[in-house]
Image (cartoon, rainbow, N blue to C red; front, side, top):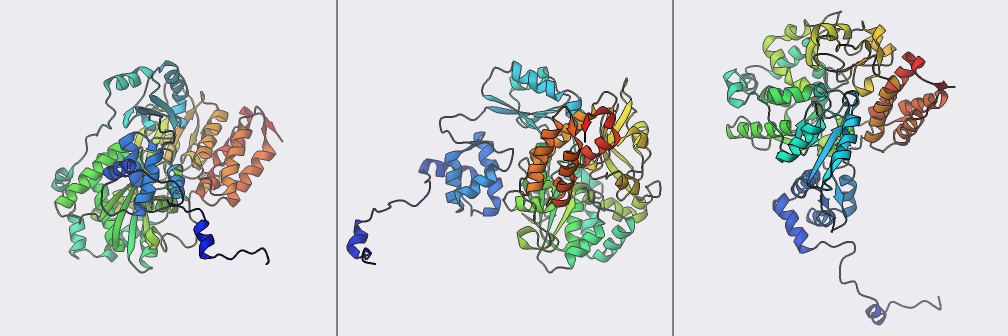
Length: 569
């Protein structure tokens, strides 16, 4: 205590003074640039990802000084801005103030179907022939255009069935905007008695209980992958006090899936009316549509048509809000999607509580898939039997199958629940491509496992015992057809590499497990015991379905195609 110096007024005066706050400081130029882009309205932490998109679109990248300014404007730590920014694949941070952002970014789809149709060689040729340093060439996961493989996105413009020549033509023309397909607009939809059902619900001419009864009898289940009964979902959310929210999951990232994009770009108002009916069913305070960034045309269509609905006073302003994804497959998981809508990293939440209890902004939230709500109007107007009677093999209803791969006519195929893959190929997809022999198929995208052609008679639907016995499931109904020209080892590695890239990194079993599995699968000889151990740990200990299902394709290949592999015990 003898050496203790009292903090007198004199000693405090001698201390070095801090004339600026701690941390990095923004400059007035950057602050003005950011405010000019994101507007001068009241700022919300929940809109962080939307602000990042605006800056990314304006400047071609996220500049370091702009992120510093943004953190000051919305009053959150810079570390928080950075952790969100670097989580999403479509955000590019440039820290060097002297480095110029790329003039244009080219993303080549490397998903399974696109790889089958030559995307690997395509990206090699692109990099070889490109001489412009201001053109950035990247690979990207499934872009939801598998029927037109290989596909490439140049800016926001898609080049389907792409070749190097096609891509350079787009670059030369400097037209990088998305092309809008022909779709049914508001006037056309109203001419077809659109929104009449919604009006009847609002005027109490048809009750919510009547609607729930029709949907329950129809056996409509969620079309996003889980296949949970739609009416029960409504009940779970309604059992919790309001305000309640409705969140539509349009983050269609499962490999081989493109059905939701098909409906959004073809008949958006049938989808929107279904959204509003679902909102009425739970008394939704507000509605949020979470749309993946890979669907710029659908984004433009929805924004335009929602504005028309507001202008015609069919909905109140800002009742339906669109939130734009940023390239993260994990945000297809409902709680991760809610985190992203709130402007955070898309990390799955621990459950319970479930999102039906504590969801968006801490309130009870109903999460529906695009296709689920798309069919609500038709089922209610035509009756429950219209839907339920369309199944076969003792199944009820129908599915929109996204069929791609080695078939003559890939695309969205509306077919009865319980149909077999053989019938899908022969009766709906024009048969196999010339010179190709049916070898195997994915019944439910990347996570749904793989089945050999010898099991082509299994009914395709939710809860089918024969599928479950094989470690497979229907999921998003993405059917990828493989032929004798496809090597199963390469197929398995492509799918596992996808999960490695898309793991959110929150839990160790998935983060490390996917990386270790990919490393082992790249070896000439696979260690069977090591792969089985990794698979068991990932399926048992991962937080969400990504890690739990990531090794389904691998397990299927080992089970059904071991003759093509070199395995060590």
